[in-house]
Length: 257
Image (tube, rainbow, N blue to C red):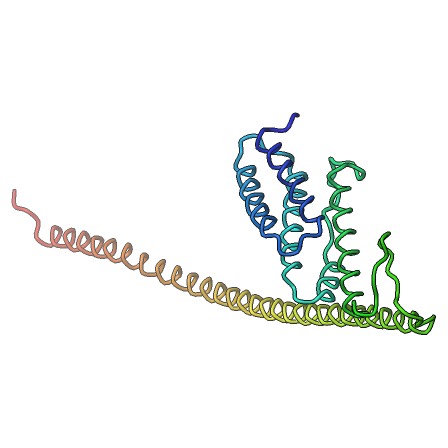
């Protein structure tokens, strides 16, 4: 099924936003405006009568969320925080109806790799500084002076140490998230157990009340039956006594012919 005009416009704007995010333009306010417009087009696409498939729509949501995270990363103060955030951020994967090597999926992967490399270079510059180094015309970083292999080894140790610290922070955050998840699971389990206990008590009370109500209903039925018998047999006995008394009076005082 061919894409609608709204979907085509959304895809074009999405490609433009991904290209702008891949370019190294710090402080570019246009990307944020473009992403806001992309969100509006995504909302219009959801309300459109001709909607894309559900998996493709979910993939569009992930791409927009990824670009929003990229904008938030650009606002972080240090390159180390940006690099750490990039490691936690994952690009949108291929949906069931998309090929893993499709241009859309490839752009997301390339954008994630470019951001990772960019922030890694910025973090390396923060660690090593720019005063004692310069870049050659072909882009290769060279060191001034005759520092020798000792300076290179020290720089490498600094980089490795910083990466190790980042990994430790990530591990601590994962452990903290695991502890919070375990605590929440235990709290939820205790709440469920307490609810089950209260439900069992309510069931027992309902069963006991039902048994008592049944007993009282039987007693009331017996009492009602007894009362009904007295009301039936009482008038019958009275009528019988009056009838016999009239026969007795007739026999006692016969009529004169």
